[in-house]
Image (cartoon, rainbow, N blue to C red; front, side):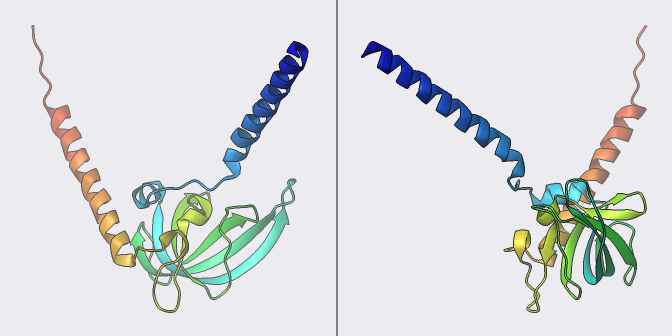
Length: 176
C-alpha cells in the first residue's frame, strides 16, 4: 500500500506540474486587458478612420499573412495627422491582431513604425464604430467624447510634469 500511495502521489505531482506548465505557457496567447489611458500613452496617433483597402502582401515563416491596410483619417484625436490623410497600416493574420474590412469605420490607436503604422495592442487598439455611432469591441461602453477627455487629461498631465521638471532644473543650489 505504501508503494502504491507513493506512486500515486508521484503521478499526481507530475500531472499537476504539466498542468501548471501548460497554463503558464498558454498565458501569452491570451488577450491582455489594457486601459484606455495606457492605449493613449502608447499611441503616436489616435484617430477615427475609414478603411479604404485591405490586401495580403506576403506570408511569414509561421504561416501568418502580412496584410497592408490603407485608411483615411476622418477625425484625428491625437498625433500629427490631418483630416483626409491616408495612412498605411501593417497587420498580421494571427490571433488577437487587428483585422479590417474595406468600408469599415474604426477608432484606432496607432504606433508609427518606419513608413507605416501598427495598431497598439492588436484588437484592443481597434474599436469598431457601427452605423449607430457607438463603439464596439474593446471600446464598448465608451464614446469618442470619453477618448477626447482622456487624451486631454494625459496631455495636460504631461505639460504639468514638464513644468515641474524645468522648475527643479532651474533651482540648483551650490553649497561650499
